[in-house]
Amino acid sequence: MTNNSTNLYVRNNRSDWIRLQTFIVLRWVAIFGQIAAITIAVRYYNLQLNLGLCFLVVGISTIANLAAMFVFPDNKRMTQTQLMLMFLFDILQLGALLFLTGGLHNPFSLLILIPVAISATVLQSRATIFLGLVTISVTTLVGLYNIPLRTSDGFILIMPDVFVFGFWVAILIGTVFLGLYERRVTAEIDSMSEALLATQMALSREQKLTDLGGVVAAAAHELGTPLATIKLVSVELIDDLAEMPQQKEDAELIRDQVDRCRDILRSMGQIGKDDLHLRYAPLSAVIEEAAEPHMDRGKPVLITLLPGSNTAPEQPDVRRQPEIIHGLRNLIQNAVDFSNANVWVDVKWDDDKISIKIIDDGRGFPPHLIKRIGDPFMRTRRPVQDQKNRPGYEGMGLGLFIAKTLLERSGAELSFANGCDPFLSGSERPERCGAIVQVVWSRQLISRSKSEAQQSVGENQPIQV
Image (cartoon, rainbow, N blue to C red):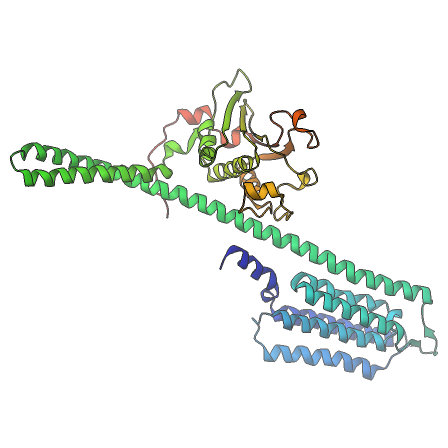
């Protein structure tokens, strides 16, 4: 199952996460609350209610709850249809109870909003809209047709028509607003969860590649001595077998295969190494490693080192974390994709901070989206030029979100801006006129201190796979 189909399955099956037992408990609370409200209304406020019908409606809800308890196991998970029918039952049961107790003149009529609000968080939009329409219909019916509340003296408790109408409008607006609000919040949470999952997958992939490179590098190191010994012996055999052509040919084959093994291990070991000596690397080396996949795409990536003070002229050694490398790689990839000709990477440092500024000469960020850059799943219509530059790009902002999340995990702060006013004409635009992404770390977070640099590194530890 692909990532997109998995995410769609998750969004469409949120109800499968909810146990029936949870709703049974909540319904028991509602039943006891209804019984308490009817009892208090009759005993303490002397209201004349049709207790037989009222308790019949409450009893139906009780029977339904008991049936659910005995028919289904405690770990039963609700399907979309089952959950929608349960909400529908609650709306109709509460509507019947309101019909018997004054309709919209009953202050408890506001509770009819609860099923719709909950359904918006767990059901699909179609089911939520259906339940919202049912709620509005039931509210309208009990507002027009109901058994009025009467005191023991026969006095009817009613509100003025304008208040009843206002109460109906409030419930109508509340149904729509709560449904939309809950749906919007749930969609935001789901989008963030999916984006964080994608970020974790990207980081896990980068970590596996690094570990794989470490395994290969360790193998190359361990096999280096025996391969060298085999080659030395084979060379000596070639000299000793000068008068035996067939045996000499076999010895030369052994030597050639040893060289081939050495070349294979060397090329595989270029992926990376889990070597304590390489846990830290010069800042420029880390940036070059991040930019390497995009160096040969026809648009030069110009890296400039700019010491910020005379007290720290030498570039610092920083941690070679997968988060840092993968995050910077995503940012450089975006700059190369959307630039016209050049990409600049300005690297500054001083005693307190390390700053990396990535600039391109493209059109820059859309002004109306610049405040939302870094949010996942910003679906926008792609210009024709972008489709040519990035034919496989969906334009959802997920790449920048992953880069931002990974870099912030390492302690960085990111800011996004444009190099110039996007409405300037071509001749008025400066050279560095495109998007600007600045990444800033506190130096002590990712840099190796002088005392650490002077300490012995120690032996490499085995890679845990």
